Image (cartoon, rainbow, N blue to C red):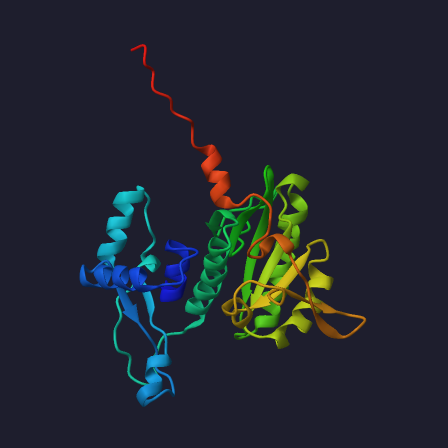
Length: 275
């Protein structure tokens, strides 16, 4: 699932005019490839226009994607919007996870740094019965032959969420320390639903995931675009949040971009005049 803004930045990075994206979405909806849905909110009248729509593949669109990419898509990759009566609406938790991750994805595409993105990559843990699955992993280019790997985790309070966080941190610590150093992520990016969550998560991280370098952000910070205030940490001595800059995750960074990297992968083709 994705918002119109996320689709625009992913398909047309660097373009401010969204008309081509709007036309593309209209065409896809008309052809039944994607559908749109929204949710009940207190917004009424003219304010309803401020409530964003979210787009997803239809069943037909998912079947077409399977043919194009020769890959089986889980059923959760397509949606059929229906009207729920008040009080019986579905949980929005999964939508929050996907939209928050997609906001980071579209920003990394916009600043032309991302070279790889994998949803729920399996991380093999030696001597364990199961794999570890970060929410997502991505690799960015800092400069020529210099790539940085990140894992993403997304947290939103739910029933018994503290114990769930502890279990998740312990699992991440085990996966991280089991990997050889060259396969470990540079940082784990934790996306939360508000700055107020960072203090307690930071305390739990120091206790249950001490080997892992973490940078926090929120959905609201990501919506403002990647910049100096996107990533934060909790400073234990100062007892306050502090900004933590990642220079190569900013627009205009001087190192080789993803576009330049991919352009260098294209072979030079010369005509053979002797044939």
